[in-house]
Picture 1 (cartoon, rainbow, N blue to C red):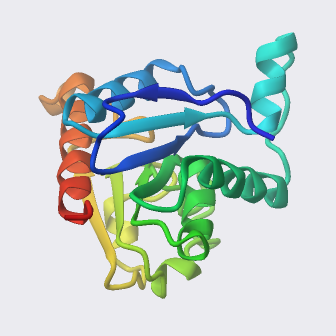
Picture 2: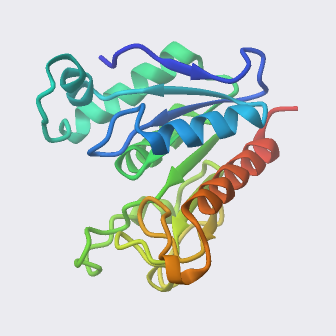
Length: 208
């Protein structure tokens, strides 16, 4: 059971995005705050939540590894049930996005948003975790830093992703979209690009 939902954006928005955190940081991490508030400012509602292990950390301050996959999946299903199936997109940062991608078709989500998808563990590009993305039926947006160690732009070009999957690459971005200073880009710019990409995607898939 996840803890309380944290909302941004209007209650009468055309679409709500249930947004999960990554493996190591909570739902109010600055990355999550920036993205949620940016998407809300574009007219959509964002509902953030935490998986049980992260909710327990909030209670006692103790770091824990992520829950096992069945628990993570059950949590997403529970959140979707609370929010209602209609006009609901799901997604998340890194691990949260990966779990959402496994649940999107099953839950009948209007769309899927993955922010920094973990295609493989750093340094292990031969162990790709994306087979289900070849046949996913849910409209999907993956926002990825060009040099993300969990899947670079060059690596992703060789993956068999389904026709429902859109990719938005952020210049010189790493896993949290931060570029190198020498690139001429800034973290703030890349986060703004990410928000714009998500907002544009939600606008395209929102029920009319």
